[in-house]
Image (cartoon, rainbow, N blue to C red):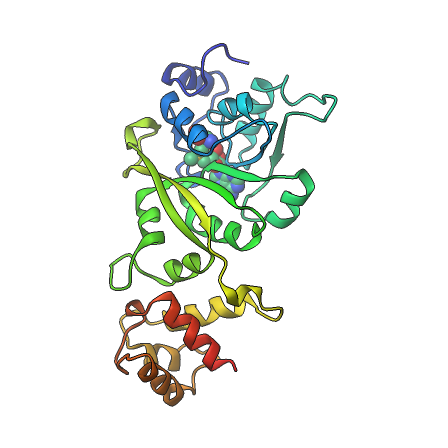
Length: 295
Ligand code: SAM
């Protein structure tokens, strides 16, 4: 283990150099090189000795190292072969089997291919703390929200443009089907910002540390509720973004294609004009429409 923090710019550079690591944009490899920010993430997530943390995209362990000092166990996922090799060497002591199993696990896998419900139950994970790869952050976050439903505590570092999509309001330029789907599962609290120059290489935008606050909608508790079917409906509504909602649905190729008259009637029931566009409706409006169209 390195005697100073991995996240110091000098140590990060030394590790990258030692293992011949060239950071890949394709894999969203922007490493945190600010130890204060890394510590602040861990503090903000309230990591304690009770916690079994999942970290997706551990890189060379800049955040892992700090979490290990506080947590009971950290389970890391990393896709990049070379980073996995470096990580295994840097953390060789922590990866060793102890009386209660190792305090650190590393799974080499594509985070988009994992099943988070299985992973959580296998390791007893109770928190996720991750600096997500930009390239897949939006997709991965939604997948985790759907699959890791038993988890109350999730903390993600994501680039600001993605964070803004999560909290956009109807009518905002960032409001999209993604906003509706993610806000169906959770609320998002912005904890603090990390300036872009705290990462190497420096991304084009600053990052935001967000806390996910579960907001399980009543619909989800219904025994027959199919979240994929609900998301398909939202996708159909937004399928032609600039068109009126009624026209989008008619041309979506979904089972709602021939429901224009009913949709117009339902819209009028919630005081919405038949010309309304998808980006003008709230989550509650969508829940109402979906329920009514499927009863
Ligand atoms: N945790 C480190 C930090 O905070 O400096 C690295 C974070 S970096 C933003 C994202 C990490 O995710 C990279 O190490 C990258 O190789 C990894 N990654 C990218 N795509 C991945 C995927 N599909 N599955 C697992 N890890 C992935």
